[in-house]
Amino acid sequence: MEKLQKMVSEKPVVIFSKNSCCMSHSIKTLFVDFGVNPTIYELDEINRGKEIEHALAQLGCSPTVPVVFIGGQLIGGANQVMSLHLNRSLIPMLKSVGALWV
Image (cartoon, rainbow, N blue to C red):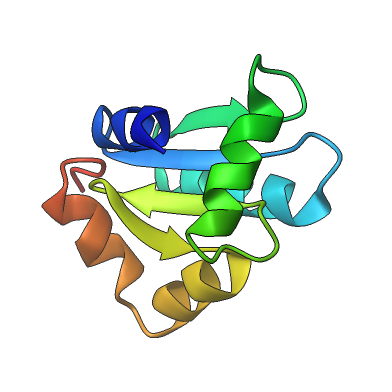
């Protein structure tokens, strides 16, 4: 859990993903299309990916991918990100952490 906290606090936007997950692909594409350069951890490719996935599950993330952190704060999965986007809260949030300058 300590390792997870360090990972999410070092960059403005962190996405935990799996290459095989279509929702992960959609969320990554959304951020990149905004002009954000998120830090992406592919849990099916990195060392200790299962351990990190377990830590995400302990935080209440279900499913465990995609999971987005903005400014070190857990935002949640695809549903939460899309809800923020649709109610026009996502872009101001990204601007406030310096992930988006426009």
